Image (tube, rainbow, N blue to C red; front, side):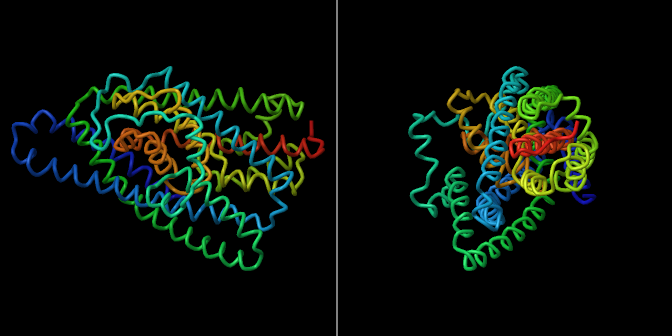
Length: 410
């Protein structure tokens, strides 16, 4: 946790220093050969290398972690009544969170007026008919899907493969164990790449600041406000509605019962690190059985990313607005689908928000340079989204327990 916090601090420092450096040298680049011919091209190279390292991680990281996660259930029958209800609730609340994020992004218009041209891709892909969008989710050639980095197809194949490992019994267990080991190596590789993030963020934001000056600074306050307000709306409206309708309890009862876990998540910015406290809160304050809580909450800490998903919606709109890329309704629906499924594959990985945002931007053809615009304030956004993730875990746990006939404490 300390290492992760230190890395987030370094990224924030790199972000701030990049803005300061860019603002300082920007007016002199065109008139100073040293800056124009050597310094700025080198900075641009560093930024592009960082982007390529991020792209390098996406396919193997998502595939191995998803296969290992799906197979870790251990028994296909556990994907029955409780498992299906849990997964459906997690995916539905995640999709709703992204929609709220997109609404907040459209309302706040944080990136409007920045007018940043993208070096990789200037326009979004044209929307496909909805039938083709659904058909394209399912891969005909999973190897080709990986080569082309088609994330939706990779995610679907990985889930099927993980379930097949369970059905295959002992032989499947050996395969899933191998994927779990590979996933662990990918987490380590992700950590290595994220160590370069302060330098990559510095380079990317310095180049942008040098080109466009102080005009890029103001919108960040709007991004932070959009994410925090969106998280509050999701917690108060969606989770309160779930608790009232399914558990027949008041929202105050719910939030009071999980306040310790929520505060810990906000401070530590780790759903997994908060898990012991989350388990204690739902068992002692809600009276939920060990059988339900021990299944639902660890699964939630792994795949439930409501806060991160909401953040993707806000940031995708922010990047689109900043680069003057119009997103149609169909494209925004594509963001919902991609981010909902991608949230399963990136959960629990340091820098997950940044990796997941790269996937979401790629899925609709937005310039991935846009991640530099939000990476520096990620430490601020991370606290809110992790807190929302944990609150969502506890809400789903309470709903599932009630649906199984358990009597919650008053």
